[in-house]
Image 1 (cartoon, rainbow, N blue to C red):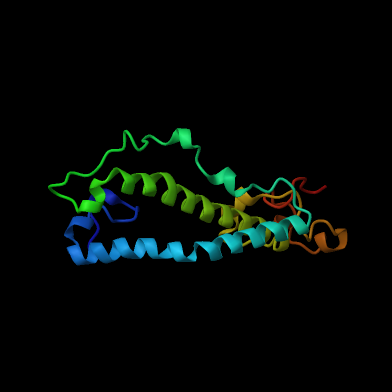
Image 2: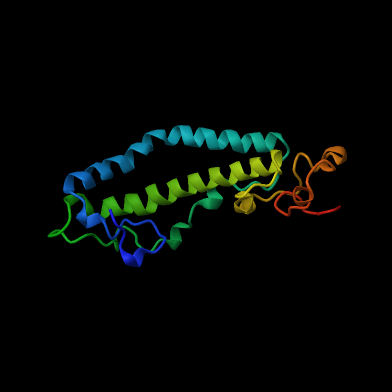
Length: 175
């Protein structure tokens, strides 16, 4: 499917959605909720990473709650929630409860969980592997004071200059 011109380098969905068959969109709706079944495993994985960091000595590791938006920041509540026009949309999208459950619970809590997990995996990567590669700068939100290699002077000396002095995994370059 050719992307619309106004979408530039973004994910192209809005310009294509109405062109998709009703069956295709219904399957997409079902598929978006099936991952709920994996949430217990993702929570378990995230907490295993969190506790592994704590057992390695990490302090100031952000918690899951740090990634959840404040309830007061949500634009709508059940009383003021907008719904879709019944003449053009399926019945589910016409209920306030559907949108509140999605926009207040499912989406922000899911996004927060995956952002928290990704953040911690970046911390782990920066701790154990302070070795540069083309995507390493993307790990800045998981910056640490020193990597595993930096805490041992003989090992730190083996690092490439860029790795030894990278502010993502060394708070005091050349110290």
